[in-house]
Image: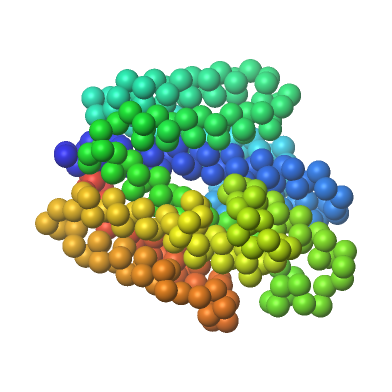
Length: 320
């Protein structure tokens, strides 16, 4: 496959996944903001959302105040923010348009229609009237895009590059989400030393984290227990059967990298396999004992290194 085609497919998938992830986080944070809490706590929630996406600095250049309205506007439809939902859907559609010949008609029409519908909604007043409905629609359209892709495309290199992009982006987002939430805890031993009210508040926050990655029902099924941070971390980092866990995402990256391997991709595949093995044979108590923030920071660095390696081995070279 031509590197330019692989590049467009890879980034089409990454941008679509990024739009969905942003919609998930905004939706859950908006719901959490409706709970009884101080103004400072509400502001911290929106600041955390900007931190997850590394958008704090660019946000501060355009807005004077961190509040729900400004953050939603910046992360949903601000065209100057390359990670806004609008920017991501536009980029996904443009990448799809560039490689229409490598996609089925259904895949292209789904991407195109997603962009047209969401752009039309954001130009009107429907988003202001019901932000939750718009965010839910972005998630549904992303699900539809993945389903149509897997259901209609030949299982060749084009599909493999789409899946590499999807799962690399998903792993990055899950790690960022976990890192920011755990750092926001008031003390290092999780619930130790907290009042009952504080524990109840944290329960709702952990529930929100699980819902943001569609893992609330899965948690109940797997652990059959109250929601505690250690088990949330275990589910979202090490469970290979949890679709959005780090272990599951990296396993998919490894499998699809093997299917598109070329003469120069050996080192990238080795690093991906090493990361997969580290996740497969780790234990959550060991990770927590050595420091979750350090673990997740290193994971994000390794995911970034994988992305750079994939770019070197398969995609269009970046001009110096």
